[in-house]
Image (cartoon, rainbow, N blue to C red):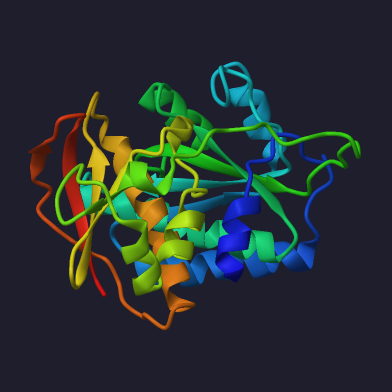
Length: 271
């Protein structure tokens, strides 16, 4: 699975070259953002490109990034939520991951940066009065050369049996069933999808003809919905390689009580 290998090797980059992306490539990115905006964003979310990263670095230093350490990059893309619908958070993140895939195909590296804890008036002053609600920006550019002996930080990934259930919440899946349905590789690779703080909050319930997506509901934060958007994007891309061309359908979001956690239902995928 090409997308599976991409996911396995996908990583956030924190060390970018200071040199700007070539003019022609930036023009391509502007067009890519415009297409995504027109096709998917409309009145729900907007992508805003900040070509001069130096200004944002200066304003956000000590206020955003990892533990207040700003990620220095030559350019940034802001994800601006234009309304407060759950679906906007979900599909905003979904389409930002689409954009990350596009940037990676152009040889560029990326890193999500949270602005959740910043005052709204400060964000407008920094990012522009025309913005509505920017909670995340994406740093992008060329990665600095890495020493040949350097290793990517290790992060533990859930086993398939930990996040895929059979027919009902927390009922262990029979991996032979996944093999027989041709879904073993899909769930193996989907584990490598990024999530906030690497918490991997998504869970799947496999039924006869559908798959239900849920999020662990403990210590609920609405921005976890963005994790749903990310996993939905990669899931759909990977099922295409299996000859299944379908889309997730959002559901009402009922809350279920399990023995381990509470869960919020997000979407259903028809096999």
